[in-house]
Image (tube, rainbow, N blue to C red; front, side, top):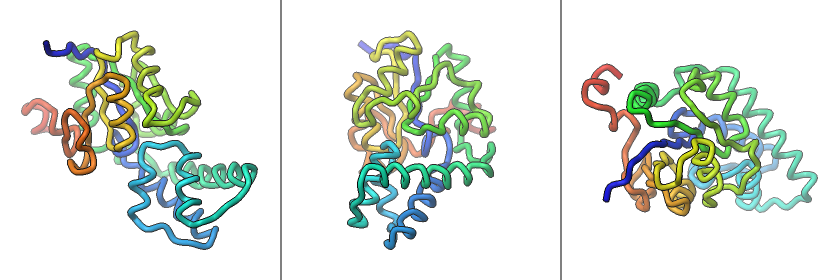
Length: 218
């Protein structure tokens, strides 16, 4: 029997908005300060994970060891650079078809939540003008275990007052797809099929899912 989908849960970076480049610029700046360079491939490893986990990945790549106090200092510095870069953020950062698809979900009475590891998620939604589309927001300020643990999505479903089986997750990372499936939710992968093979459906962007009449004007 087909599921009745009543809730849609979205990751943020790479799904709704293009802010991943600002994250990586900040991580690259931090790496340069520590005396090494980050190649593009490391950016893929940082998708969908928390700031602290990302820092551990960066430090491990650069073979840098430091105590917990220093790690906290580095994480704060990276976030300060990232937040500074977001001052230039506006609606032009919204990815193709996002606003049209969110509006369409509204017409179908589908409830909408954010499920992101970013502690800056609400600010990003506000700066891009997307915040009013969301019935619930779960982000890094909730201090939940990071993806691939399912906690972020389970709390989002709870905030929507829906069961996991009634929700679909939109993600662009392997960790996010794993978390969605662990939560018992359908998973739509946005990005390269080879990397997101565990998703129930893989698309290039949300505009693919729009009805033809809306797709032509998006």
